[in-house]
Image (cartoon, rainbow, N blue to C red; front, side, top):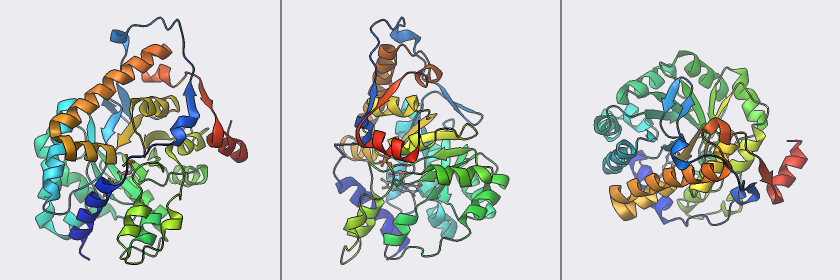
Length: 341
Ligand code: FNR
């Protein structure tokens, strides 16, 4: 199985998976305020990740590039990012480092959106040299290093040795020309992982939680005997991963994984996330309704986020972070059993 075919499988299988209906976000509840004392026009959505100021916390998370036909997807998504002013990550650039003919499938994102915030992406074992090349390839503002051990284990042709990754991350975080985000790809993170990342000087973490695109299911469908379906519920949801972040004031958190709508975005921000990444749902809308449809959805999410912040009396994301969130159900139980306040 070539790497290019795998990229196409990922897009095809992500598009054919069902949109998620039930989620741990449903365990999180805002408390309606009848006297919010703000107006919709007062609401500001700008956020800061590291030194970078973004006009919106919503961004298009890492998906593709690396097969000739994925260039069109990256081109379309980059147009969506440019029209809506959101940041955009590309998929893993490993393919282009191995085969320079594929560089254009990523570089198109920068060509389409010269002034936008663009995020490079590599696996977390990458060398400093590879990281520098990936950033340079698309003149990236940030670099994501992805952690995806469950995906690799279930992927028929995946990696089998995961030693030395923390040290590799440390080297890249120390020497990369742009700030590094360590991200999961839909399995979430926990306090022990945050502790490890903090210990090596990582500053920005995308929790990449369970609840949306599921790479155990996707890789399992690529196996002839599909013997890994029992692991499809593996990992922590995005809500739980954010709650696990309690007390890590030295780290900046980004939320992603299973974000279904603007209310989920607001919940992530209320739990302290500085940005909210969306991958599969944007790919699905883009493939069904094109650039215009995806632009409309992101714009309506911005409007709806302003509406929810108005209901809560929160004029800025800093104020949204302070509003009370009531935690119920399984998510509450998890917090109690893990000693999270
Ligand atoms: C991804 N994702 C991903 N992540 C990453 O860091 N590097 C990558 O190359 C890819 N490739 C990729 C391909 C496709 C088709 C999809 C849908 C996703 C993972 C993505 O960035 C995100 O972490 C997960 O998809 C969870 O978010 P959603 O899809 O639930 O919003």
